[in-house]
Length: 422
Image (cartoon, rainbow, N blue to C red; front, side):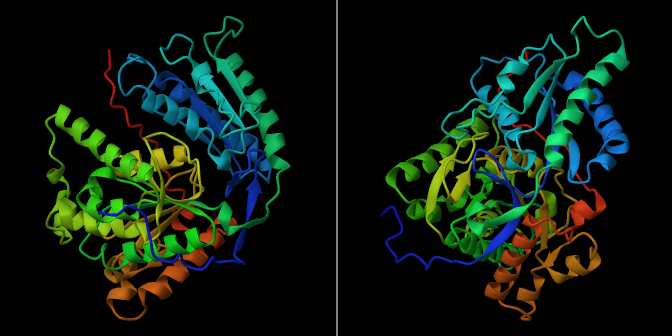
């Protein structure tokens, strides 16, 4: 089968823009957030304590800062750092802190005795981050003997946090072309309408973003695996096609190692929603990618390296996928659902698209866009695709129109860790 799209490319889409925060490495944030990441789960409680204290006592003094968030995880202690697959959670944590919505301002909170040394979370990649990326990152080690008591630890972190809040508070939104968008496409709680309404709508919007010079990620290996025969011919080069097949093979081997069967997906809820098997689900899931050529493939935890349509390899679990897309660098998230989920991320705006009007009407204050109108014949896929594209630009500009941010529905990050615990 031929690789590459030999059809004439769609006309470039010019004149579309949004207001974002431009970073020194060339990326653009859609939020202006201070991130507090951790090197080990042992300090997650302190990170949460600090975030609460900053929100209550400091944030009101810095109106230009959207939020402060704890980038907690369950990694760092009792893990085999050198085992096969161990690089995935390490680079994921490191690259989450490099997400453009943090503007480079990150505090790394460490205990001091963990296997994952906090220095490994410093970003240093001259290709993807010419400014070295470490200027805004600082490490605080709680076992430092100079800290006498809990209040001393808290004061040290708060002092560093306020220095970063002052920097973030000076940042202003500027007009940015739509080519600066990095949009993650994902589905969860899918139903029989997903593949005929919301996912094709997301796919049409994906094509618009790519035509505007922007970047779109689609993911979920086990939910596109059985549609791989439709994806490989869309690879822009033979190298991309080989990488795409390679990620499918890696995940097949990963599942086989544990005796898992990918046909165990769909979930019970998917079946209640009318999806009968994984092939049917895969065809609907792949629709989110639209029709553009696949420009690149990312392994789990890697950062975006080029523009266009990207396959970012991730498991299908909602928050594992979302976490890896945050690490890849997305600045807006589109999440389609048919059965319904309160899914939300604190560091990236999440646009919720309902696949059917019954759900969208019942969850009127949780769903941002009702793609069920396609099934009812009220709107076409193209009309709704343009509507979603317009909403993405508005959300990227900071308009508070999405439910997850309005209600504060933000879940924890979930790392993909295929390595052993020792």
